[in-house]
Image (cartoon, rainbow, N blue to C red):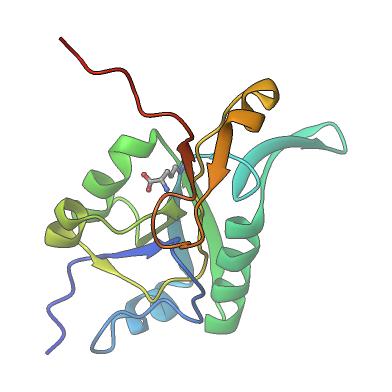
Length: 156
Ligand code: ARG
């Protein structure tokens, strides 16, 4: 047990905790701080704002990271980087975990361990308001909800 590879908090439904397996958290408690990696360009989860004239990283993920650190009795250190650099940073121990609105994908799942989900994102297709009258909603929500009333022209 306890082959700790790294943790990514993912954003697909609702999550309670980020878990390590084994006694992974003990090392941070001993060290006194937790390093959370994020890419602060993803409001409302993590983004820059100015507070009292100071550039500050805020958002729901940041609040969660603060809660997590304080419940562990350690300080929080945020390490900001490009989103695509996060998993590499986790694997090379530059950060202790990622909390950055990251969704679980098969490729990421091969490299790191995800927490239980804490947020569900729903992606939608956008159309012009003026086109809406030509579109019929489908009753089944698990399939695309909107299809054109007319069939697409046959490709020759
Ligand atoms: N949920 C998407 C993903 O996992 C986008 C996350 C972007 N997050 C960010 N902090 N920029 O690929």
